[in-house]
Length: 429
Image: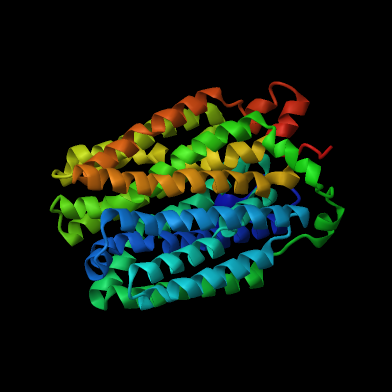
């Protein structure tokens, strides 16, 4: 099926608009993927970097945690600025892509832990605004009945490129050359995607000028929203689990005796399944509702690290069990973007997204890898860390039961007012 027909909105008068939307979603798919490749690609080289720089599990975990903290700070700052400017984000996205790609290229020059930690902090600050602004642009361009799927497609880019393909890219480059040369090479695509965004992303200047002016007091609508507050808890758990598990899964498979090629196969298959799930689960939620889809995704998220522990020495069983990722992959999209975005006025979407990222990254993203690394050092086994990541999503499942339904299809069955709020189109007061 052609890409344009797959993404086309059911708008009888908007063929040109549909094409622009499709182009935007496709470019943002790659932009988001590059963001996560440059952020998490380093984890696939932790065995080599740890040996070369003599780092323990806690130090390796801190390289992920520091990025989460600076990412959180900058995402909130620049997303608020974007909303105050009426959602104008194009050049912020371009600047973010260029700056963090440059910082990633310098990683290969690090000679000690301190330098590596500083560069990872810079990368987080430069990357922070990218994903909330990207998702805000996609959400504004999408019709309500396609919003979940389109936003899931963007997250699929982070998983396909930043998770499924990342092991082959990073380990392949490190094997063919060395880990230091891998980083400047993976920095190049970020510059290319920044150029594509600059050339092809169009912002509606008229709409931006006519949009309601966001005032400082309007941000209370975000902080006072029940779903947004519940989503903060869910996002913290989701990011802490995903980032922590992603940081230590490659090292765990290495310590369990899997060969580099076998570990790469497992991680690539896992990444592909999770990427597909990030589209399937939100698309399912467009039909059955956000609550049941999120609950199923939460349960499946806990099963993934558990299956890594149970089946690490039986690769066929491990690969088969990863089918649960077809739902687990949608948990981040639903709790961090879809539910908060549909619960606030359209003009405050980027801020709602960034608030989730800021809190989720600061607490979950920073503490997840750190707690997992500390637990692994204390028990002398990464198995303990993975079991921690298997148990944490139970709290996400509880959150799924407590949120109010926001799916536009279901909202229309209640009242016009609720439907407008669910589709993110409520007006600012």
